[in-house]
Length: 95
Image (cartoon, rainbow, N blue to C red; front, side):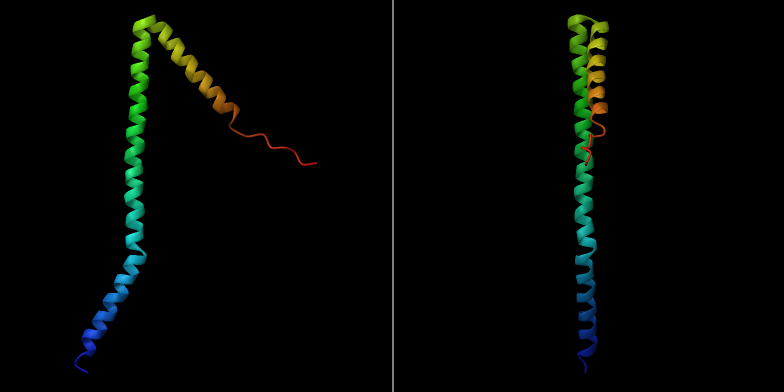
């Protein structure tokens, strides 16, 4: 009977550890990957932004600023038109 309080404490501790492994540990892994994904997405966005700025400056030096604005603006218009065209895929009608 002297061992009863320690067995109860050990049982409660094992239950708490089991519940923690099923809930908190899994969520912490998902949150770690989500945070890493946000950091990667931010760095990728900055990389694309710096690439566009560098491209604009190179084209601006070679051809002039007005041509650079026209070229990159035309590129964005074409990309936007392509995305707009594909926004709703056409579904084949069932007869």
